[in-house]
Length: 145
Image (tube, rainbow, N blue to C red; front, side):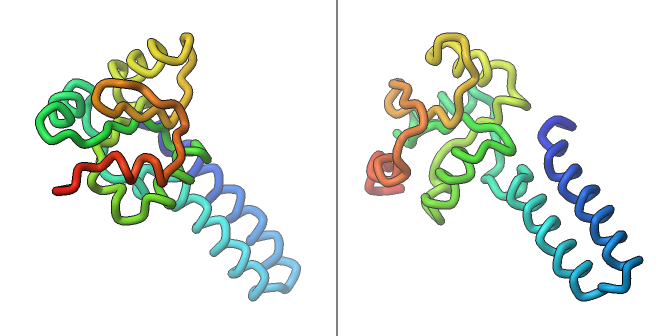
């Protein structure tokens, strides 16, 4: 769990240090603006931006029942963030598995990506697709979703 929060915490700490330096130099507006940027970067890189993760076995069980794709992701991954943001509200209809929290999820990703933890890896009807186009993923959602 701590690995998922490493990048966000580094953004906050670095932003705080730089903002403190600007504040000591007499630039409170610049310090506040810079700190806001770093806090926003921390938020975007945190697990909070993604729908709640579930375990790989649970995601596969739910996917078999409702036909929705399973997305294997990890915090801080720019390609995962791209997929999440481009899907918009549709992202909540997918089953998300954080491979840093779920060893079975990480193993499933390695099994289909030549031993690499390449994310996002999306399973649709049991078939893996590595870093697919977000529009294609949206098209894979069942009509009732």
